[in-house]
Image (cartoon, rainbow, N blue to C red):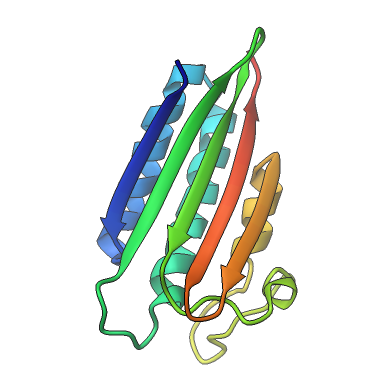
Length: 145
């Protein structure tokens, strides 16, 4: 049987550290190194922060983030699959948003490096988004034995 987890949280700043810790705790079943665990925590933190800061900007509707994780065990090591979904405003131009230093909030202190950091720390990374419907970030981290 495949191990999986689904977690829906309110898109508020207080939940970023909880989401990061919950995914890290789930990943422990693969016996990751401290470095691998740190990579996962950093990528999840960036993804959840993007949802909180960008997805629901100016919206009054219920703001939530869905986090889905799945463990793929292999003969040696395994993989942690993570999907983080928001139901916010979506991204008009995903290719542009993936460019280092791009931010839609230039008036705030944002580096525009969130997606770049996620790509750097994860083995696989993709973004799917539809304006007005939300964004889904899919990541995978190979975990060595």
